[in-house]
Amino acid sequence: MVFVQQKLKKLVVSALAGMMTAVFSMNLAVSAEEHYDVYNYDRWSEAIPSQAGYLASHSVSGLDLGIGDFSKPSDIFRDAYDQFFIVDTGNNRIVVTNSDLTEAVTIMEEFYYEDGTATTLKDPEGIYVSPETDLIYIADYNNSRVLVCDYEGNVTMEITKPESDLFSQELTFLPQRVLADKAGNVYVVLGNITTGAAMFNSDGEFQGYYGANTVEATSQVIINHFWNLISTEKMRSKSSRSVPTGITSFDLDDEGFIYTCTQSTSQKTDTVKKLNPAGKNLFSNIGVTWGDFESLYDVSTNRSYQSMICDIEVADDGNINCLDLTSGRVFQYDKEGNLLFIFGSTSEQLGGFTEVSAIESIGGKIMVADSRKNYITVFEETDFGSIVHEATNLYNGGYYEEALDPWYKVLQYDGNYRRAFLGISAALLVEGDYEGSMKYAKLADSPYRYNRAFEGWRTEFLSAHLTEITIIISVMAVGGIVLYFYLKKRRKTAKSREEAEKV
Image 1 (cartoon, rainbow, N blue to C red):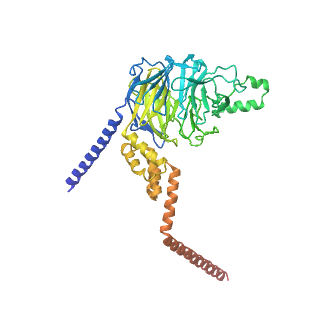
Image 2: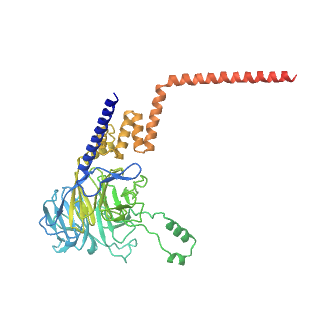
Image 3: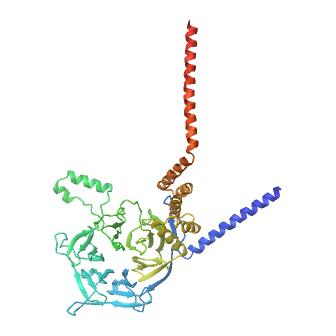
């Protein structure tokens, strides 16, 4: 009998080891296709290995398109017809491709005024195509203008340095990024302005600044502020001033909200913002760390780095793609600011970059431009990525129960995926499975969701055992009263006995 038990125990151990090996092999099959570490963050904010949501499929160069090498491509934008507009900065041109980045549809090098005269670009850096008007807005950096034209290259407007007291006439007008909202208002990121994006109306008239970053309240800033309160005007003129970091890039979602990013290691707040028409940051209270949680050490490059978000793109499904200049990585978040995936790196291999400059997406593909390698890398969604997106979209749409099965599938791929724990906890809470919801809330280390589930469990427990609880409380109350009078009688008897003994 003992022999049989020992043999059975060995078989069980062997089976478990085989299962673990199979799971480990399956994980390797997914992540080994990328040369860099694929990771995410757990509930303790620790970087841990994860499954890849996207894999680099191929890269596209100017030679691949038959138009000669790109030179410092600085921006890429997808229009309403799924064409890509690539800002080929060093070649002073805009390259328009099809949706697959396999064919150059148009090369825009000359633009024409109404009188027929031509103009060219000089180091353009940004582009936006309005889905409402089909107008193309080009941030023509070293021509100090925003050039507005149609698809044929006919110039409809130029925006240049405004003659306004709000804009220092000593500064050069240096547009780096541009976009236009549904009302035709134009927003321009300027390389030498830190007070927000310059805003112009549809006629090109300067309206002021929009979306300025706040100055982070560091100890030095607080000391400077206090010193300025007590110092003289002459002393204040010589003291250092605390100024916000300027916006680096931005994008517009389907609802008209503007998302901005700031490329800075010193700026901890306002790294990524979601701005309403009044310029209020709707992300100010969600407590998200955009990019890596802290400085990380990259074994492949033998250096530590801190995230600097240089470009931002809002996909059709509302997911937010942030491009990190220092690590060459893409950080993808859902519309609520929950981290979904991290992919990319700094390297010479496919999926790695030297100097990332812009990001854009279409369907399940994400395109990243490299201004030094002079090509665009295409990442494609994996099966794991597809399931996560399905579950996330259902969850954010309020379909918690429908998202339950996809979330369980996500955990089959990655048993540490925190977002799945939260999703399952929410779904079980809606279904009334409070104990299950508490279990997954605990795995996600979410006190808020655990407390909500506990409240439901407590209410359900009290309702189910109300009669028993009432009886127990009544018995305890009666017992307490009986015990009180019994003890009172004993004390009275004991006191009478003491008095009798004294006599």
